[in-house]
Image 1 (cartoon, one colour):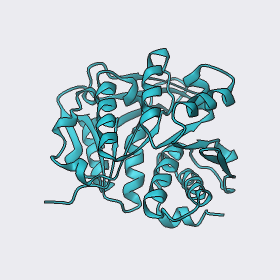
Image 2 (cartoon, rainbow, N blue to C red):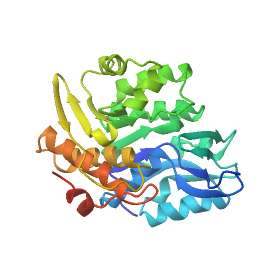
Image 3 (cartoon, helix red, strand yellow):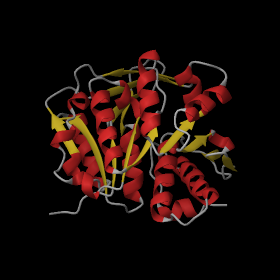
Image 4 (spheres, rainbow, N blue to C red):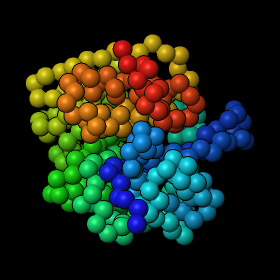
Length: 302
């Protein structure tokens, strides 16, 4: 029997339908999903990794399955159902405008109890986030799984990755997942959207007050990022690059931070931060969500 994964990302894998022309007659289909992208990044860094989630049995699900196989994810953790796919309809790209199609879709059928037996005893780190935590009943299943993992002593990371679905109905989930997580990634856009405020500093202070023991990765796009642990803060500028596409940059940064903390625990916080920032930048060097390799990340470390 194959070994169990050390890292699992639990949540959504979906299909982005991206408009290609002003008349909205032509669309580009791309596999995606925040938590799925995190899993692919970790697998690209040669960590035994699984994406735990549910996908459809149609052409969209087939594409996600094939891409997961190509990314060397543990396919035992992907569940398939005869339900409709989850689609993100990106009907404007600049500025982005989108909505989701997925009533009673496959992703909502995920069952943590159906995952391979004994996997939690071998897993070291599980990542949560994305719209999966804003879609019931899936969200409730994932929060319950996070609570079990916390009791097991498994490290948890969380990236809310704000989307329009996350209104006041998401507030309780945001707080609970923040309380459970050991590492939390958030951006300025996340804070503004999640807290529905222009007071970004105040929103970040509130988030941190819910779990003062957690490590916080605060990403700021081209301005780099900061790492916050207790009363200490470290800053790192973004390396100078020619950006091709920013899709998946945040997913790469939180995956890289988890990788660095797992594999190089003796390093200083600034070194962990530098690795995460370099990974986010490296993900911007190719179109689409393109998980960077270890060599690509290390080439950008300043």
